[in-house]
Image (tube, rainbow, N blue to C red; front, side):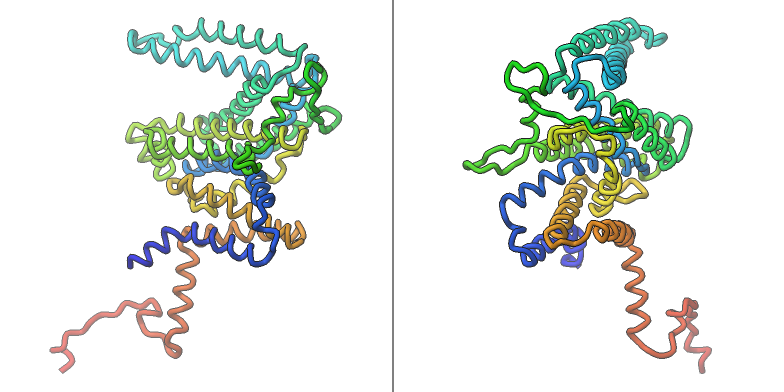
Length: 421
């Protein structure tokens, strides 16, 4: 029984090791250092999105808009870096940044004021919020003629995607609508928004880096986001991979060491029981969707740095990859069960699978079919359905012949020995 329990708890990690070993045997290039670094670089963006998706699915929800949020974020990032005039990207991103600052300052002010007063607490945060909005808007507006730097881009793109994600959560929590419908609508809307901001039906905005003192190019510091960290004289760790690992660590701490993490599991396990227990289920839902949007913004900036462009369809299909990684990692689509560690392993399994298929020259059409099959198989395995099917087949073929009453589903009643005499 101990061996069986160990195999059940370690099956995901054993699967990763088996895939790694088989891939190494199939292709000599798989173990190459450059190939391993490329795998980590390629899975980083999907991994960051999958971390946010994990938080959403743990509450019993789903977020189909993650790919579209990455698309619109990458377009805004590229346009803010390269253009020196007020454009659609600035007109959308700067108010979103100012609004986020205002909400944060207003909430914190009201939170501290609650210690000293019971009524009209929200009024105490109104004036600081308005002041924060004005200062943030003026600061960001003054950056437009000179171009935005690396830090400025993070400060504008992440809040924009965060607000779109929070809008998902607000509609789902307050209007009591299905997450599938709400995030599907956001997915379509965000794609249209990305094309609108990009202009010309969604043209590609290239990013190039100017020389020091050149005001026309992106700052050289932005290109560092796509570089590798040297270890022992070799470029081993891509910086996007560090962002992925740091995001996973922060999410693990959130879920395992904080009260908010316990609330997330409780909402996914039984939302009605969580509500009766005093857990603010609506706020929890808004938080996880806002966090998912925030991580999409982070992935968008890293995408723009890695591929040196902003595209209105940059995130096409990313929602499928994120959901697949989360499901393979053992997180239940019903909510309430899963772990960040499993998602990280799921991301690596998916990354290595794509890598070996590419190395072997498998057509992309077949790879897409395989992704769908893997998702279904993973759900069947984690819900125990596959085990029940295999057990049924085993019982049917173990003793050929006429089935007994118990295997036919009939109840067997024991007759006392006295009545048989």
